[in-house]
Structure formats: structure tokens, C-alpha cells
Length: 174
Image (spheres, rainbow, N blue to C red):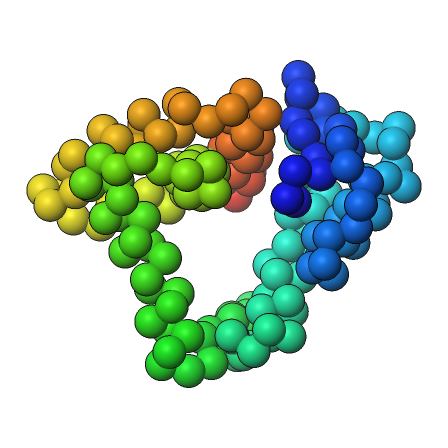
């Protein structure tokens, strides 16, 4: 959230209470400020994950980059957020292609892309970015270097996100 929150030893700390312009980020920051007694990172990740897809989807709809599509399934419905135009599909695909190129070429990675790379690893999406093992072999090596170079607070966020994803996957297998 643009330098407003830091993860320190498993807890979230608001370091800048100035509201961000983005309404979703603003709402999350307001919740963190309103609940100072609750700081555990794992708890906040679980709480925010409950409706994260819908909240991010709504933000992207407001921005005009996606539209929601509801599919009927055997056991209910599923809402997907799909790019609203061919330009938006290209923009969405470009993010993973750009990150793959940076990693394969071993380039210096800015903090935003390092955080993105960490979250790609944490959420199990590595194969969506580095989809061709033989062509992207060097990217896998650089990816680990990039993630390891994250500042401590972002590394902690990545580690907790990976643990949360693992818990959800393990619970789903029961």
C-alpha cells in the first residue's frame, strides 16, 4: 500500500496513515487503523482473503479493464473477471511476459517487480510466468535471487502469503 504498512516480526504496522487515492487500498488501510489491537499478519491475510477476489474485481471493473462473467456450475455459480477488450487482454498478458523477460535476461529488478515476483512464487503462479522450462531455465534461477533480495518486511509478507496459500490448499484436500 505505497509505503503505508510494514510487516515486522509477524505483525502489520501502519507507518503512514495518509489515505491512498485508490479506494480499495484506502478501505484496507482504514480497517488496519481502526483495529490497532489486531496486528497479526496471518490473521489479516486470512481476513482480507475472504473477499479479495470480489474487491479487486470490482476495482478493475470501475477502472474499465475487466467485466464480470458469471458461469453456472453444477454446484452453484462462479464469477470470473475477464479483460473487457483485446487491448486489456494484451495488457494483462504483457505483465507476465515482461516479468519473464526480466527474469530470463537476469536484469536488475525494481522493488515493485521484486514484490510481484515474490507473490508469484508465494501463490504458486511461477509456471504462468515462466511457462517454458527450457527457454526460461535462467529465469528460475534469477527468480530465487530476486525473491531473496526483498527487504525483510516484504519477504515476511511473501512467506506468510505462501503459508496461507498452503493452508488453504491443504484444507481443500481433506
